[in-house]
Length: 120
Image (cartoon, rainbow, N blue to C red; front, side, top):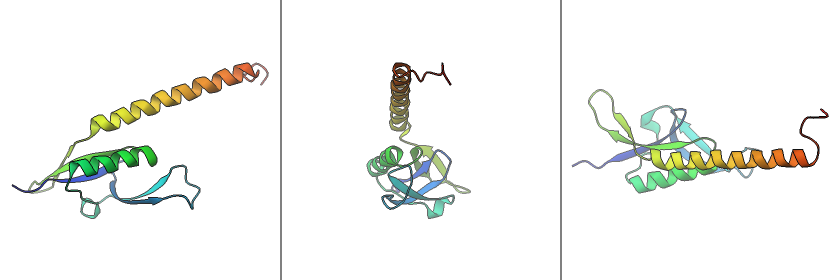
């Protein structure tokens, strides 16, 4: 039985290759990701656990959401089957809830300080 192989793709369809710290740049995220459009140049993972862990880290610290796909060998082209959709959906839900909470705090602060648009 052949071993399973996994790749990571972002929500734009680009494959993950590597990442580095963005401490020396003015980027809006904590890590910068190198990606590719070609499956052959993508970083391959042999463990679903390790690929999911890396995708979660990238989804939290980089710009965008990253998904783990299992590569299923097929004659003309390999098929990709998603594996960690539930984990990324939880991160998205948490991001949306956090943004709503932040917007509520900003709206409350503007109302308390008279900047709610009455005098603009």
